[in-house]
Length: 394
Ligand SMILES: *Cc1c(COP(=O)(O)O)cnc(C)c1O
Picture 1 (cartoon, rainbow, N blue to C red):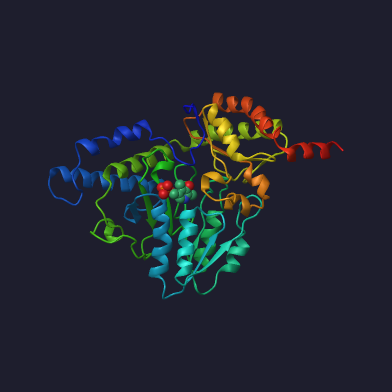
Picture 2: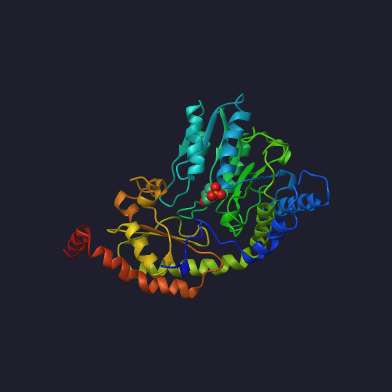
């Protein structure tokens, strides 16, 4: 079935038409290598620095603090490995959380194999870390705190400014994976005491395979990739000018439109959440009720498999995502849903719908109309459901 309703914007977003228009000339006309000195290359260099300025101002940073990478995963790897190596003499302890993206978690596991101690902070039922537990975890060996800005599955926004204050007070660097947050919620690295920040183009209307890392002036990191002198020797490789120009434009647009988009998405999100919880029994909202990404709706339905739900939705032309097993290639449900304390069965029956500026109220209404019957159809096949209903009646 062709996708008619795209509710998986946390997985990736389409390239915005305005962004595509901006980047096409950098494939066709201005294809020069930004490191060369002739005319055509000057435009590449100019566009590179212009985009750096756009990305910097989207997060309240200085242009010279922005380094372009090939995406969020690379930026996350670079932050953790880069800081762990550069500050190895100071100490070898990192604090992160149990609900990070795998780009953080698997890098942390790699570092553990190389002698770095890692604390994985738990989260409460809404997906938030405890500031007290964070502060207690800091020791003289601690070189980095890495806590995501907003979670990609349940949408919970972490208390970033408070984390920044604690990190600063203890002289520990603070990195945040802000891939889901940049262009979606207000960010100011100065006010929030953020020292390193990861972002990715394809989560905000720019192409896949382009990202950036903000590194505060004065913070040292070892590069991940060696080669030429690009990006002040912190990230070698001929710059992806078209991607970079796209990221700059997308960040600029997203920030300019943020207030309006947030208002619209919050309305759609809350209508979707309320409509589901009111009309489908044995359902619960995952993530924080208010401190959550404007476009994120994540709901667990007891007694069904998220995968089956996705297939039925796909047959109606709806693209969404689930926290259950099969797609991730493992039998365990999402580590995020486990961390907020969901029982296995409930975690398996979860549905993530993530909306963005293109989505409409008609689409939300369509889901609200169709979903109850789909869920019921799946539950009718479940012996557990039959039993639960019987017990509830008694
Ligand atoms: C998508 C995502 C990433 C990975 O970014 P890529 O550009 O796909 O490598 C990292 N962290 C979070 C929170 C994400 O949502």
